[in-house]
Amino acid sequence: LALEPHDYLNVREIPEWAGQQSVELDGEVRFPGKYPIRRGETLGSVLERAGGLTDLAFAEGSVFVREDLKERERQQVGQLTQRLESDLATLALQARDSGKDVSESFSVGQALLNQLRATEPTGRLVIDINRVLGAVGDPEKDITLKDGDQLLIPPRTHDVTVIGEVQYESSHIYLDGLDRDDYIGRSGGLTKKADRGRIYVVRANGEVVIGERSAWFRKTQSRGIRPGDTIVVPLDTDRLQPLTAWTGVTQIIYQLAVAVAAVNSF
Image: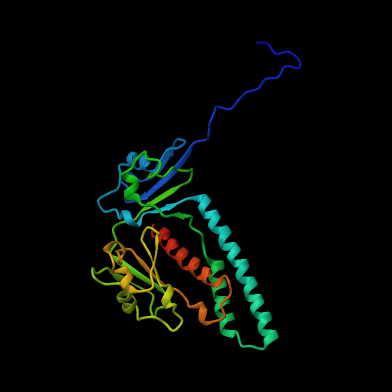
């Protein structure tokens, strides 16, 4: 067809076209590496192509990382940083006007601010990899992939880690029958700054389990301490002069620290 002056030629894009997308599988996968994905493909489908998990895989400790979640975390940390800076400025003004000694509160707040500024977002999404493997193609149980997603499968582990307001932050060999307080005791016990009522456990897959008493964790085996768990003893901000953001800041710092440690183990 010969074109003439004032003709219009419209070249349309192929419907639902996207450039080549890929995801990365690392760790205890039979064939780790980068895999191209088609639009709408699921994690279970790619794992099948990769041969599944090895016999040494610690499925419960799987780390799934997504770029847009990382950016969302970065924005959340930025907002908390601004809020904490504002709280510290308010605390300083109140101290000047009232003459009260808030040096301890200000010192703790400044330490939290420094930790928050040094925090690195990971973009971790909590997943149940065994559920995914058992539901390939089921959109309600499987995970639809996005370009740049990463799945990290660690080798089997037998440790329990205790961090936060304990005498010695440390990791211990998992022993069946020991509860939360037993592991805290093996880390030297709580410090005077510990918040006994807000102690929680971060599972190996990133899930958070909260309970005020150790007996709560013994109600069922599914809720007891498991290999790969991290017991977090947060700072008691109520004993200082708490301002709105402080409790949330401590939770973000500890949970991101656990996620960073999991990602950096690869």
